Image 1 (tube, rainbow, N blue to C red):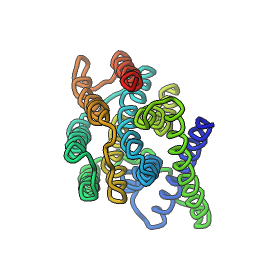
Image 2 (image 1 turned 135 degrees about the horizontal axis):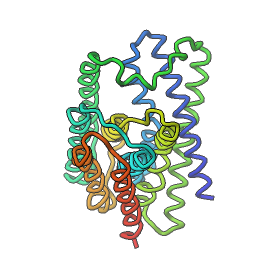
Image 3 (image 1 turned 45 degrees about the vertical axis):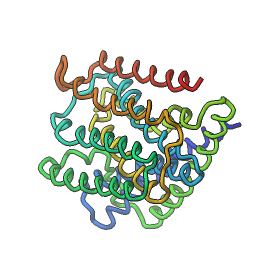
Image 4 (image 1 turned 180 degrees about the horizontal axis):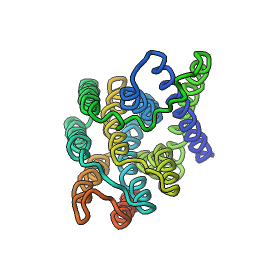
Length: 317
């Protein structure tokens, strides 16, 4: 029955996230916000809502390991699983701007988060606020830089939402909010039950099952695009998702409820894996074929991810 709660929770999170994105974008058009700003702020925050609700719900329930494991595992899955599978299907081109802003920000936040957690084994409210301020500064810089190339960052903004009625926006918002609320509750409850029945820690279930579940939308979108030979989900989008996961998801969660590190493997293993997956992208895009993640590199990323999943369970035993 615990797996049923997990699956139902994931379905509701996907549905709720989709309705929240659509309603948020439609509402932004009502306020005459530019497509560039909508794409980089509204859509980014809305697509991080499932991870935020899961982490927040887990922290309030006293399951800090799920809060942290969800974000750390999602960041690892975005690179190892999503990028790995996508590159295996169709080689991925990398924009030269990738290592000028997005990658340094992701790497910086990953290292900062590690030291924040290590100092006192807790992410407190002030540290959460610092993470939130960093994402605001990052977005301001990103929007200013992107004004010179406005076509970047607006791919996922649906023009048809400009003519959405106020009633429909309200209904979408309500559906999204209710689905995200119950989806996060059921997923956290199910994850705890699964961990108990398998005799493993909540941290293992969160960095594997929960993280993979919250990465399913990105994985599905990228695989479909790659199979259709369309432009697959960009590396910039995946890195942006990782940045938002650390800065906004953990930032907001910590401001509401400080997140404690209860399992030493989070710092001793999971965080190191997350930083390693982030770091390896630079040599991968520079060697041997520059600015391309080909099938061999995709295979290496996916194989490394499977090793991480195996070790997550193996170390527990």
